Length: 141
Image 1 (tube, helix red, strand yellow):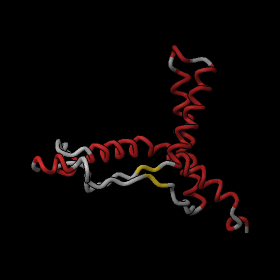
Image 2: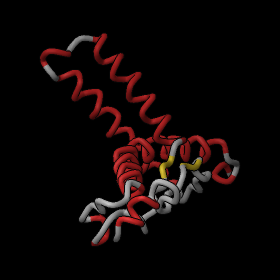
Image 3: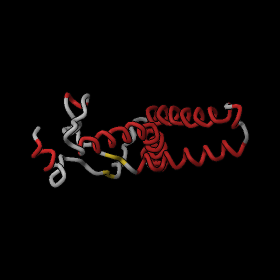
Image 4: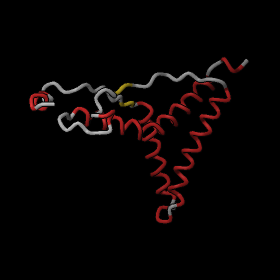
């Protein structure tokens, strides 16, 4: 990489991708839907129990604040899906930062956000899948 590419990055950055709404999940068998919802419920109960058992925050107000924050996290994680461009993560497959491009920093940040949002996305889509399964007429025969 030369100085021209460093200056040119200001006008023509490397590829980055935007965010998109998730596609509608397709539920599988009854067992798979129920197992996913059980795991998602365990994650929610575990997160709220962790807040409850911290000695300084073991009152109902803190648990209610945590429940609201968890709800917002799940909603945002379910409906916002950052898509990093995996071709522009730096050198050696993203192990080494490219000091001459800032667009790989954007993609690294999007990748970190996507990883941090994946548990909330799993929880939200599991409950959405349960709702879709419960309202479908296929299993009511």
